[in-house]
Amino acid sequence: MLFQDIIFWVLAVTAIGAALGVVLIRDLFRSALLLAVVFVAVAGFFALLSAEFLAVVQVLIYVGAISILFIFAIMLTRNVREGNLPNRLQLPAVLFPALLLAALVVAVVSSDWRPIPEEELGRAQLTQTQAVNIVAEETLAAEGFSTAAALENAQQAGLADLLIGAFVLPFEAVSLLLLAALIGGLALARSRGG
Amino acid sequence: MVPLVYFQLLSAALFIIGLYGVMARRSAVLIIMSIELMLNAVNINLIAAASHREGWGSFVNFDGQIIAIFIITVAAAEVGLAMAIILRMYRNRATVNVDEIDLMKW
Image 1 (cartoon, each protein chain N blue to C red):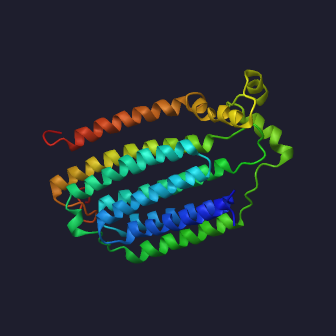
Image 2: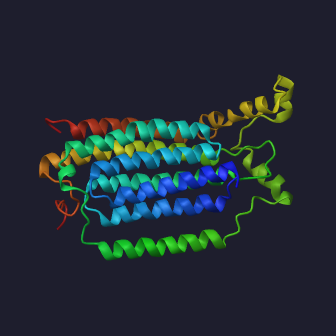
Image 3: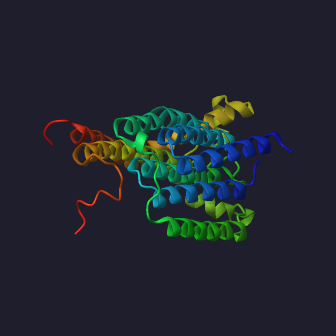
């Protein structure tokens, strides 16, 4: 068994076990802590999938900020004493997700997840060049990026290129959304007025 | 590399657990936590699909990662607003149980 496989299974068991704990445990404070465990495991998956930047972002934003926000919300409301109660929707709440899970598993397993075949690669790349704005290897070699590691590093800049290149409009829209959410949150949570 | 199907099955499992949490629990805070679980499942799916594209030569595809970044940002904004609403709700009604919040029900 490969090293990556072992890491995957350890992370998978951690993530699913902790996620089950989040929804099933009575104590809400413990659910919030288990949610942080799920977030760390997901960051591990990102690192395993060689999305290092997103792994760091996941730890910073989810583990560092969002988990703390949840713990604050639980402490500031009376939720800790009441606990994690079920509502009156138990039967449909088990049936519908179970059916959906079965459908998803069938869809995932029966689909043919091959990468794009060789003969169609040229056409596919042609349609993607607009979005994938990465410097060609020849250009990089001319600039002095000779080793494979340096080449890979230079191409990692593609994420930043995309973010302020092809995806600049969603990027700006999302920054506006964050500002609006910040002001809205302040206005809502203020103790007087509003 | 671990096959794409494993990541997709894992993502489906996490999503379903989150869906159960949204449907079956009373506390508004736990419902938001379950929504975060579902969003994380979607992110795993996107990034797994983005990094399992073989045969692209020097073309590294970052589209999935970009969309995941946007999802993380929107999720952060959503949690911030949701927490403000929940605190407000608790101050006005002294409860955060979603089946007792019936202000807008006819």
